[in-house]
Length: 219
Image (cartoon, rainbow, N blue to C red):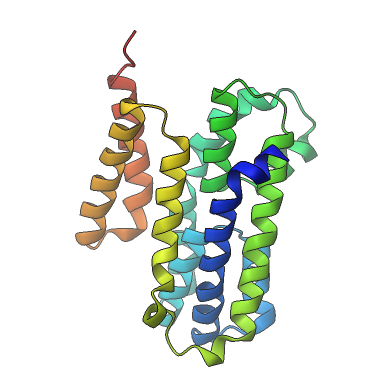
């Protein structure tokens, strides 16, 4: 399948990310079932990592839930961008497509449509493969969690940065795309450095999108 041939580097990166997540979740007090259930039900890497860090810090469950919600609000503009390409579909199908929506699935899907692709097969195949990769890696990390004292010792925590770098590399189609990515990275970095990590992703995505509207592609 085209989606797997083009997206295998991202799928591999996500698998590497899932293992340290499973380890950290166990260290935060979750058992194997709870760790796997979190990946199945939430299926949002950035929000899951943030939730685990808050749990390890002893945060109130309400704070954890609100933080995950704020981080995942970026899926709203992603879904709005993809919706015209999906065409009219029953509610259950739309919910299924929304469940598979992640940063990686959005980047690969929107890139496919921008190249003239159509239908939902590319998006669904990649999204389903991503789901399987993430959940299998999470389970592995949860099972072997006790054998890895701190995933950061092996630099596995850098895998999430590598994944988003790969997404930009695969999705960028010109200087305008690169400029928008750079604006988003700077804003997110500044906000995170200022202690505003929960809103960094949402704010960076919103402001970078506005920058994209202002910077029109050359004709």
